[in-house]
Image (cartoon, rainbow, N blue to C red; front, side, top):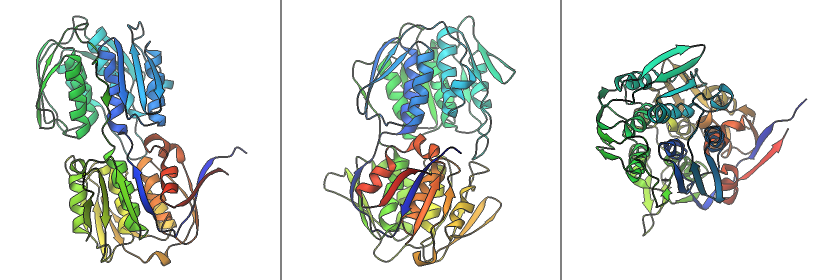
Length: 430
């Protein structure tokens, strides 16, 4: 019987100290696919070492591009012309963000064929808005045998496209496609995340004119394939706001004093508001580069509803639920983005959490940490893995967390960072 990686957490330690926030997973992935638009050398700093980055590296290599770590956190992507237009399922299946290869390829070469993404553990994330947008730009879309084939023999044509929903990856795909569509393309009801703004800045560095990034409407003045050139200045990946919030919660949950470094408070607006509502004090150092949370009078129950940015992130819903397990009173958490993103509830309950779910809303009754007990639990998705670690850290006992392939996708050296703060956490094979 094969062994599996498990995190063994012996909770009860008061965490304290300072740890840095890594580069954002949700920023580096579109940036790496964006390099396909301009042949030559692209350099990135503050790149997190994640399995999703490795998966992206494999796709770029298949497309005749080379991604190499010059040193920890520094990556060079050397892009060359590719004769491949069809990406095999074996490469694409590892992460849904690989759909971001579609826009650059069809814009650059006039054709692309990629596997159709299926559902995932937290719910379906259909790509119909990506495809409708590409059709608006003149692409012909065919779906057959589980594949998406996009063709634009004469090149894409500028147009106006209104998203039904401000999808992040859909916005990114259309941004990159429009970058190699000569003329003015108007994208409306687009996503506003900081990662979108960074992608826009990267595309500007390649020679694309973009207006309105970070607002609901974006104007993109695209260029002809071959006209874009790599930015001579390295792109520094922005801090991961989801990781920042996750690490911040570890302090008050363990009664400790945790500072996080290299965070940008402005990226955490809605989270910050809920922290204050829950009775916390948001503190920064003199340089505003380090943040901590101070809960002198305990954690108070809150009501949270996930929403598109700048609303409360769905990617923080499970971590906040673990946080509310320690609150005074009963909290309500409503999930509006993904239909199956309460799968972690059963695993939190195995640790002793008191949670009931009705439809899209979970009620969480706060408990004293002494009422929890260690158990063996399974991470059901990326963010759920972090929520289980957070709650396990509060328990005077041993917990074992499986499903670490999820954690590895989005948190760089997570257990090592917790160890630095004083956690008794070890990765072993069982």
